[in-house]
Amino acid sequence: MAEDQLDRIDRNILAALSANGRLSAAELGAKVGLSKTPVQARVKRLEREGYIRGYAAIVDRERMGEGHVAFVQVKLSDTRSAALDAFNKAVLTIPEVEQCHMIASSFDYLLKVRTKDIAAYRRVLGERISALPHVAQTSTYVAMETVKDH
Image (cartoon, rainbow, N blue to C red; front, side, top):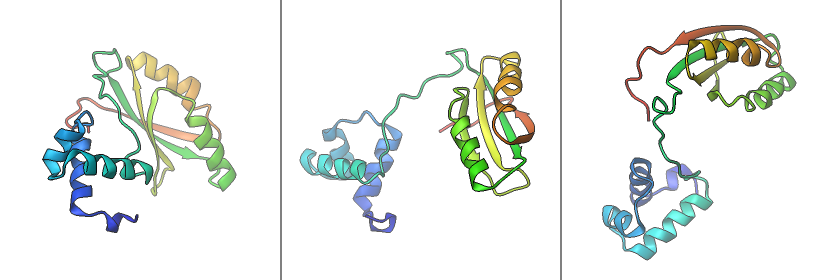
């Protein structure tokens, strides 16, 4: 089913589950105007078709001692397919890299990196990110405060 083929109820299901992935089928059905069985069938279809990729707990990263957030612009020395593939595969192995986006800009990737503190970030940058395949240059922007996250 293409995105434009989602009906109002499908979109309401997705919105409700995005806000609270722990809703029971009965609670979800009440929110979208369906009984339990049809809402369960729709959720299963949305999962099967890839609209719902999974469910997760939102963890307080500050309380976990991972409150330092930095955004890193990465410029590669080579942007041919093989180089991009090598970078993409290698960046997946760095647990501190929370997000990695290929960017259409004067740089190639934007990474969101989460660590305990600036010293830990410096180690990750120097030992892991800078050592990724084809990295030519990085620029770091440290987040001073998170205003919105999610």
